[in-house]
Length: 394
Image (cartoon, rainbow, N blue to C red; front, side):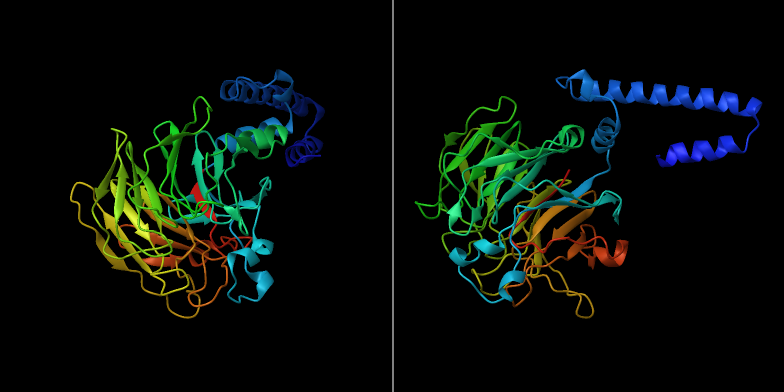
C-alpha cells in the first residue's frame, strides 16, 4: 500500500459511512484525473512512446524526472582508492577507471538537496579524461575518454526520462572519427564539437570534428586547430567554440576560437599557463578554473574570468578554507555552473594522487569558495571519489 492509500484508508476509518462516500468518490476521481493528465503530459513530451507505457508508477517517475529541479550529475573519471594514492602511469590506472554515473543532488539557489540523489545506470564503457555535458530535455552525453591506455572514439547518451519510463540505460551514438581522451568538447548550436585530446595512435591531436545532434548523423572533420592540445579547457560562447590552454605534454596560456565562419582564430591569452583546467560560460563571462603548470607539477587554485567584449582576463586566487577540509587542487575536477554558482566536483588532493568526494561552490559574484557540505549537509558529496571525470547540470 502506498503512503497515499494508507492515508486515505485511515481517514475513511474515522468517518461515518455517509461522510466517507463523497471522500471515496472524490479520491477515485482525482486519481483518474491525475493519471490522465500524467499520460497526456508524457505523450506530449515523448510522442513516439507506445501508449501502453504511459500508465502506472514508471510514468509518474518519468514525469517527475522531466520536471525535476536542476540536478548536479557526475560521470566517469577514476578513483584512486585502489592504489593507496601512489603515483601511477596511465597504463596502470585502468583498474581505477569508473563506468559509474550519479545524481549528486538537486540545486535551488545556493542550497543542495539530497532528495534526488541516486546512482544512474553504468555507462557501456569505463571512461576517465572524459567530456560530459547535457542537452535538452534531460539527456546526458559522455564523449571519448580512456580506460588505461585504451582511448575511446565512442559517444553514448542517457535519457533520464526514458530511463525512468522504460529502464533504458546508456545507448551508443555515432562514434568520433578519432579516439580521444583529455579532449575539448561542447554543444555549439545544434551540434557537438570536439577538438584535440590524445589518440591511441597519433599522440596529441590538432584535429576537430562536428556532429549534428538533430539528425544524429556521423561526425565530420572540420579544420584543425593551430596547436595540438591535450587537457585543454573548452566552452561554447554563443555560436563560437573557445579552447583554452592545454598542449602537447605541457601548459599553455593561448586561446583558439572556432567562429561562425568555420575558421580558427587566436583569442586573448590567459594570465596563467594551464594544463588540465576546466571552463564554463555563464551570464556573459567565461570562467576557467584550476589546472596545473604541467602534469604532476604545481597545481592552481585560481580562477580566471573574461568578458569577450573587453578581451582582458581577470585572475582570482581562491583562498583555502579554514582547517583541513579544503583539499581540492582543482586539477581533474568536473565543473558546472547554475545561476551565480560554480560547482567544483571531485578532482585530486593538493599534493597526492587521491581522488575526492568533495564538492565546492564558488560564488561568481564575490569569488568566495565554500564547501557544499557546509551549506547543505553531509549528503551533498560524491558517492564515488572522482578524478578526471565530468560534471554537468541537467
